[in-house]
Every structure is written in structure tokens, then in C-alpha cells.
Image (cartoon, rainbow, N blue to C red; front, side, top):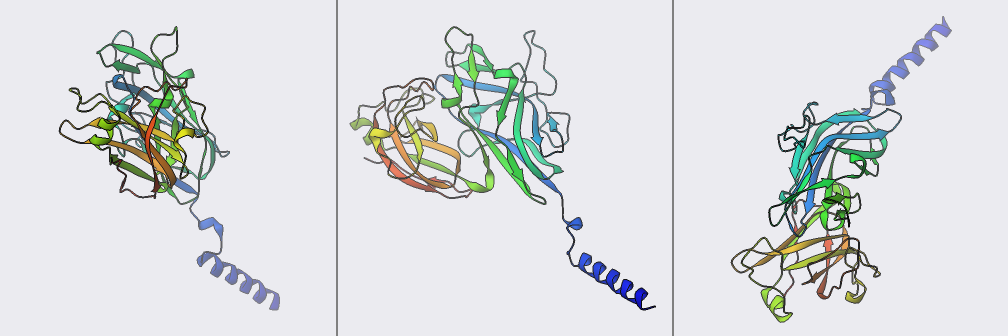
Length: 321
């Protein structure tokens, strides 16, 4: 009789602990995951059309988590912008003009997909044929991706979390025109996968007087042509003489870069989106040509420190005379 009473007490105690959250069995073991894409502009192109087909996460012992455009409820809808050589629409693709997604703009590929939590070793984006670059003069040339996949680093998704990531395409680094090959090649170099809860944005103006005093282009008739560039480097007080362009070999390599554009009236604007919260040096130059695979001559006019906080509100930083 006493043994029965003791056993009953133990069972009651375990039940009480479980009801109070003492067991991990009741903890959520899934996550929600969203992914969007954004871009920094590139010179010489009117359109950079990239054809997305699938998003995959691998690892975690759970096998592959795969989401197909237009086929899965959490994936973006397909559109008719990706076509084969015969002009036929390629099924389960979404064509995205990356040049429309500058600064803090983005386009969702995956929205709140729910799957097992854990450490996923790799994020892959499967790219379909049909991607292209429309050059400034109107010609279209193919845009190729090695093995038709963009392979990125992994992400850790803890149980019960709602994670939102953005893949930032810095085309000034990632898009190259290989000698002897038709069209452009898009490389993983220059792509940043960032957690949206840990990033901020940067925007600002460059004074026309600063441009004029340094013999830079001002008030171009075609407002789509850049007049200057802004580069961003991790860390404060980076010396101008030690700053590199995207293909250079100086001490400090760009974290990101963007163009400065005339607004058609009187101002010159730039913006860089999805920057990891940190302290940076921002520098402005009137040299707009930047081959990501070569060191180009570049002269920086001015540099300023800026601190980026994790916020949806952009930090404003102006370059003045």
C-alpha cells in the first residue's frame, strides 16, 4: 500500500512539472523562414533579369528543405518573364529585375515556410535558363550562373523562431563579363545573406559643389547614368589611400558599393540597403568604372564614419563641400 502511494506521488509530481513547462516535449520544434532578394545597381545595364526556380536548405539531419516557385504555397508566384530560346515561358520560374530592387527595396521568394528547426549548412538558389542582361543600348545578352545554382553559407534557425533573411546582390562585385565568352556571368562573390533583424540601411546626398570642385560629371542629360560612386568599408577611420575598389588589392576591401544619381533637378542621391549593424567608413569617388576582377584607378574625394543600427529607418549621410 505504501509503495502504491509513493508511485502515485511520483507520477503526480511528473505530471505537474510537465504542465508547468518542465519538459522539452512541449517546446516548438519548428521555425518559420522567409527569404527575399535585393540589389545594388551596376553600370551599363537597363535590366538584370534573374530567373529563380527553387530555394533549398540542406543539413540538420532532416534532409533537404526545397521550395519551388509557383508550386509551393509559401513560394512566390511564377511569372512569364523567363523564356527559353524558342520564346516559350519556362514553368515554375519567377523573373526578377534586380535593378528595380535598390536600397531598402526587396522582393519575397519565400514567405513564412514552416519546417524543422536546426543548423542548415547551406542555402541554395536554383536559377533557371532565361536570365539575361539588357544593355544600355538595348541589346540583350545571356546572364549565366555556374551550375545554375547560387550556393551560400548556412543559417541557424532556432526552434519557435520566425526568421526573415534577404539576399543582397551587389552586382558591382558579382556580375562579370568574361573575355571570350558570350554575355555575363553571375558569381556568388558579392552576395550577402543577411538576417533582417540585424541590418540597417544607408542613404544620402553628394553636394553638387563637391562634384564640380573635383571636375566630376554634373547634371547629365540622362539621369540613368551615374555621376559618382559611394563605397562602404567595415570599421571607422579607414585612410583614403588604403581603400580599394571592388577588384583592387589595397588594405581595405569594400563591404558594399553603389552609384550616385542625379535626380533631374538639383540633387545627387545614393542608397545602400541591408547592411549588417556595425561601424563603417563611407567614401565617395567620381570614378564610376569598376571591374570586379581588376584594380581600376580610383581617387576618393572624401570619407566619413557612419554607424548602422538594426532598424527599418535608413541612416542619412551626406557628402558636402
